[in-house]
Image: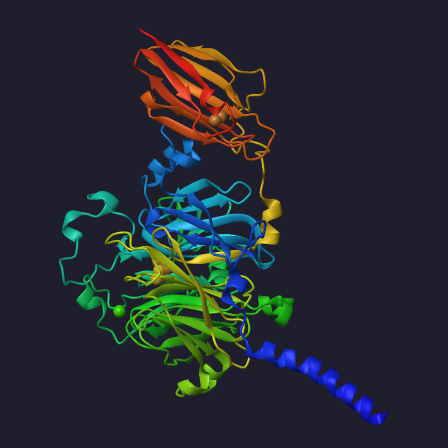
Length: 622
Ligand code: RUQ
Ligand code: CUA
Ligand code: CA
């Protein structure tokens, strides 16, 4: 009897233990990790800057599926964005033109977490920032600031409650402040530094902070230095960190790489606010400019790796560290392109401190965190990503074996790397490697001398808090040119906030044209307003009649009640095309200068009778 019980027990133990052991030994099949079958939703939205494409890619993670190629700084006709005669086009033209070079996307926060309201992204080329409404995934505001040329790094600085207050941006190219008349941008001929000469003393590149709502400049800070590259803020919002690569003040590359170390500027935002209150600023082109030399303690400068690039601060997860830890600053890490080290700063006190300069590998560009005490560095030259333990890298800076957790090969030349929700509460599950080159990657179909761009999905779930474990390459997915950095929000948080239909027009002055309200109104001797509805599959008027030379303003409302029924409006002779989503009203203006009869038609396949959705514009000769 006892033997029988023992036998049963042994069987029971083995029955549980063997599958457990087997499970532990066998890794999950990567396909099971990332494959999303029909009707399965991704866990995260990834907003990836699309670089020289001028917009943002909306990608599901972990599947890597591209959901939208969202236009920001370039017109995109499929989305009806910034077509001829539209307000968006005017906004683009006024702020710098119809193309852009997007770099760093950031999601707005409430209480230190993404609130699903806004996405901001900068255009390096035209020194402007855009704001995207995440209810509609449309770019609604773009602004440019004076006194500065080229914004590269940006950061969203929170108020004391963790709610996004400022959009701050780093001026990269120096320019005279105040601007001088002469050449475009305020340059005057004789003050352009000759090649090889130092940049003149009054040429600066300020840090600019804009109001997050209006994107109007709140203040700028100039210091004796310049050429800022990447920016980040400490989690509390007190410190704004800017990496500068040209402490030499060189005017060409030979001079810019001379100094053995460059500088990270730590700007005390709270102090800046006190200075503003005390009125210690000068107005330059309507912007309140603070001069660091006149306000001791406004900035601190610490050494940074020679010709630095990324600077990134660790945000801690409230689930692990408690809400309080978010008010307290932690470490920030700077990478440098020319030395195989990163510099670790402690920003928890009243003055930031450099605490360690551990060796990591060749070409360290950017740094991300997993929320468990490890950091990850993109190594451009080595084509690797390295994982390191923060605590050990501070304790044993000369012993890479102690703090290096793992390294993984990348295909190839990683620029940015993005851990999921690095800029709010790092999840520590996925790491996306955003690579600069594919160089004939096996498995990728060649597409000409310009090869496809690739992002690689890396599983970091097995990296532990004490700095052990392996990273694992799970998936490679292509994207159009050229993925830069990303920011993330949980799908379950954002998806319910997204509209299925416009609830009201952004511009209250644009009136919704309701059912039965289509009409043509002569509003002046040379002005005609056209109010038109679109619904499956007919415009509100079969014919619109105007006189040659009239300025025509068209208000077009999509009065659909069914979700996802978008209509188009194409009027080829006048170069007009846009798309209009359910509930939305669009306005555009053109001068009817060519007499004749022109069909306008719908370009979005909206019903079985989509082809029939067309009507006439008749322009009577004057
Ligand atoms: S930069 S590859 Cu424009 Cu973000 Cu570093
Ligand atoms: Cu409306 Cu096709
Ligand atoms: Ca330098």
